[in-house]
Length: 202
Ligand SMILES: Nc1ncnc2c1ncn2[C@@H]1O[C@H](COP(=O)(O)OP(=O)(O)OP(=O)(O)O)[C@@H](O)[C@H]1O
Ligand SMILES: [Mg+2]
Image 1 (cartoon, rainbow, N blue to C red):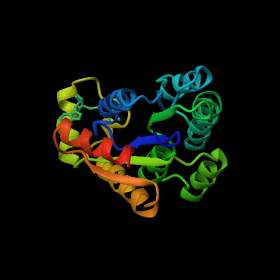
Image 2: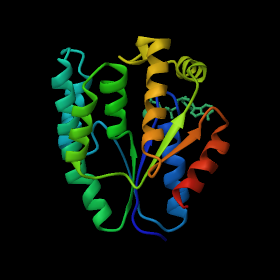
Image 3: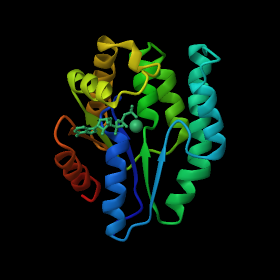
Image 4: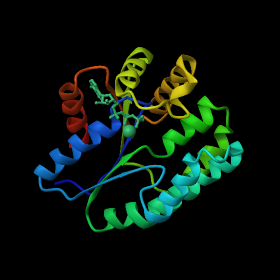
């Protein structure tokens, strides 16, 4: 079925990426596809070590150091996990990729957009499809409060931050229509997963 595909799921906290990536993986496996599910930051042994550094509460990284760590992790993940999987014919479903760096470190936190775009080009692996799970700020807040886990660094930044994140992902989708599909993720799980599967096997 089709050529091996590198599919990224993007969107803010609570949009449903981790939930939907499992549903999509299962639907593709039922169609006889080998699927590798992975996530960023992390996704390979070395990249997971860098993820631990990024998420550590012991360090407040300088913005540029944080950016370099994200791209170091990504370079390792792409080299050790993503490219080998694609090369053997598997599909790769990745929970967040460089669009998340552009949105969080760039649009939301004020980093240098051109520099982030240049690093993304250096990674030299463009997704075949990017599913942008779009939820309203209200949905985000409802889902995060019902999830009930302690707020992570971004979740504690509040409504204005969620709005910047949402707008950032929508801007990326608008600027990259050849690879991005915006999914209205405010709806039920099954409505969202039906649209995701349709886009993935189109
Ligand atoms: N369509 C939906 N309708 C109702 N609840 C949903 C829907 N999608 C996800 N949820 C719930 O919202 C919460 C967040 O979902 P999930 O963890 O998949 O989001 P995420 O995009 O991976 O978030 P994060 O970026 O924080 O990892 C979970 O409790 C999940 O069960
Ligand atoms: Mg998740």
